[in-house]
Amino acid sequence: MDLDVLNMFLIAWGTLALPILAFVASFLLWPSALIKVYYWYWRRTLGMQVRYADCGGYRFCYSVRGKPGIRPSILMLHGFSTHKDMWLSVVKYLPKHLHILCVDMPGHEGTSRTNAEDYSIQGQVRRIHQFVESVRLHKRPFHLVGTSMGGNVAGVYAATYPAQIFGLTLICPAGLRYPNESKFVKHLQALKAAGVSQGIPLIPTTPDEMEEMLRLCSYVRFKVPQQILQGLVDVRLPHNDFYQEVFMKIVEEDSRHCLHDNMHLITAPMQVIWGKQDQVVDVSGASVLAEALPGCQVELLENCGHSVVMERPRKTAKLIMDFIIAQQGIDSPSSKKLS
Ligand SMILES: *[C@@H]1O[C@H](CO)[C@@H](O)[C@H](O)[C@H]1NC(C)=O
Image 1 (cartoon, rainbow, N blue to C red):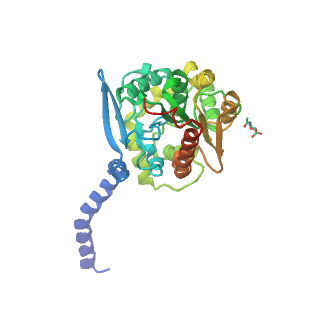
Image 2 (cartoon, protein in one colour):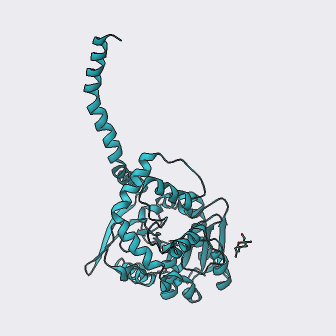
Image 3 (cartoon, rainbow, N blue to C red):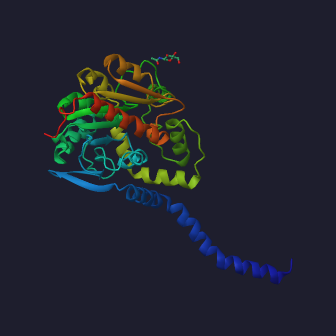
C-alpha cells in the first residue's frame, strides 16, 4: 500500500478513535442508568406514582395507582433482592381503577436499610404492618399478594393479622417444608457442606453469574446481551453485602419455615400460583399449602419457572382478578361494605 494512503488512514483513525472509544465506554457505563430510565418510563406509562411513608425515622418507598373503591385494595410484596417495580408487568394487566400498592421490602431500593432485625421474616412482617397502618390500608380488608420471600412474609402477615386480610395470593412462596428439594436448595446444601458462604447463585457478582441466575429463575431461555448483563450486575453490586446479610437471615431456622409454622393460622381465602419448573422454590410446596388449607385454590403453570411474574404477567393478573371477583361474589353484598 502507498505510504501516503496508509498515513491518511492512520490520521483518519486517530480522529475517529476518540469518539468511538467514548461511545464504547458510555455503552459499558450506561446500562445501569438505562435500567433506571426504563423503570421510570414504565411507571409513568402505567400511571404508578412513587410515594414515601415516614414512620418515626423509618422510610418506606412504594408506588401506587388508583383509589380505594368497590374492589379491595391490593398490596404486593416482592421477593429477595428485587424491588417494587418487578410488579409493573402484572400491574399492566390489572384494571386501571383498582387501588394497587407495591412497596419496597425492608432495606430494598427506596425503603430504609437498618439492621438484620428487620430482615428476618417476622421482622419484615412487623415492618409491613407498620407500613399498612401508616398508609391507612388497614381501614378495610385488603388483598395481599407476595412472591418468593415476599410470599413467606405475606402468608405470615395473613396469619398474624387475619382481620386485615380480604384474600391472599401466594406466588411460589418461600417458608415451607418442601417435600421435594429444588435445584437451588441442593446447590445451597452443597455450599454449606463445603463450608462456603459465598457464591450463592442469587447474589451474582459477574455477568456470567448474572446469566446463570436468570437461567435458574426462568424457564424460558433467552440470550441476554453482555452489556445488559453487565448493567444488571452493576446495579446489584453495591448492594451485594446487604443481599448477603438478608439471605443469611431468611435461611435461619425461624425464618426458613416461618410460613409453614404459621399457615394453620391463615383464615383468609387463599390462592397459590406456582410455576411447575420452579428451580428455586420447589412446586411441591403447593401441595403442602393445599393440604393445610383445604379451601385454597392452586394454580400450577406449565412451562414456567420461579419468575412467574416476569414469565406469566397476563395470566397472573387474570388469576388474581378472577379470584378477587369470585370471593366478592361469595360474600353477601352487604358484608364487605365500607366501614
Ligand atoms: C417429588 O418429585 C417426584 C419425582 O419427580 C414426583 O413424582 C413427586 O410427585 C414429587 N412430589 C410432590 C409432592 O410434588
